[in-house]
Image (tube, rainbow over all chains, first blue to last red; front, side, top):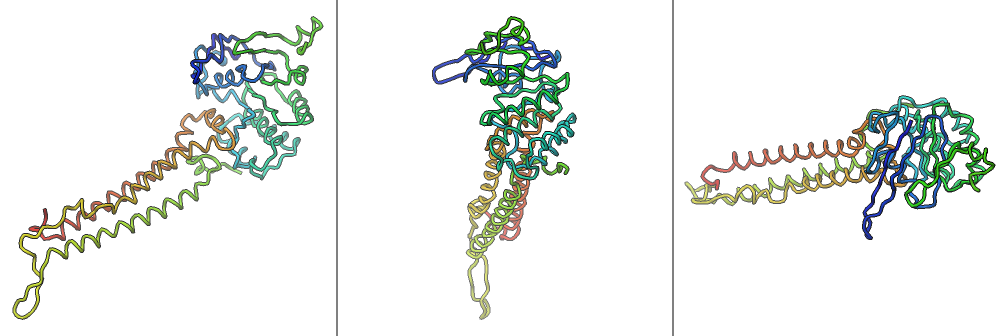
Length: 223
Length: 159
């Protein structure tokens, strides 16, 4: 379970101190696929960066009851539209790097996804198209062997066919303990994919609903 | 394909060969430049003597009251090439860190590794070893040059 309690994040800006996240509380059990929605600047990326300890924050974030440190950080993987791979390396070198650093690396899944998306294995990533880079970024996040997979606008710049392919693949390969937190503004696209939706506006969680509940009420995520 | 151990000392994909070659060439050039100290010393040493006629021949003898310039003055800038090498190596450490922000944010990946020292190791260790080697070279050259100054200069001419 990923638990966030009383999370507050402040930034210094030339205009003064800005509060990027306000009293965020949430519990994400294992196995859920959660959509985190909000307009640009709402605080989605900041939330992810707090979970990963990339930025300082006030409050408490735990994973399976423990604070997130280097001892349990491998339980979390991260795919971002900014990309976190090494652009000068090839996918094969990344595989070797991940195998060395992440004992739970899912080699079989990696090979399968590389084949499915027909990505070149021996070409430096800097020569990939934006769509291919996004695909590879998500492949790495899915294959690290993490139980909590954070995806921050992972498909920015991809065409709709690419994105739809990915949603289908994701649903097909995920194991019951794997949890996905997907931030996007493409609500319509992911409404059939996520099981729960969290809406953030100006740093505050203003909605947290399960899509099953919405279905029961005859509502959709978009409406 | 296996991830080679030597790749663990530099940011992945970083062109360390070029950096290594550059620093080795600079160190060699700096050591060669420092040899000019010997020429400067010889000039100073030569100035301590005068030629006198003895029994029809010419003999070089120490000029009475002649003093050689202080070691620091003769050494001058001759080891500064190595100081510049140290500055280069500090810049390399900064470049290694900046590499993690270049064309992607691979810093997000390396900060997520279970190996908590990874970033520090890949940024600092190789330049630190370079700095150590440079300091050793600097110390050795200083000792050799000082040894020459102390041992070769006539005692009465030392300041």
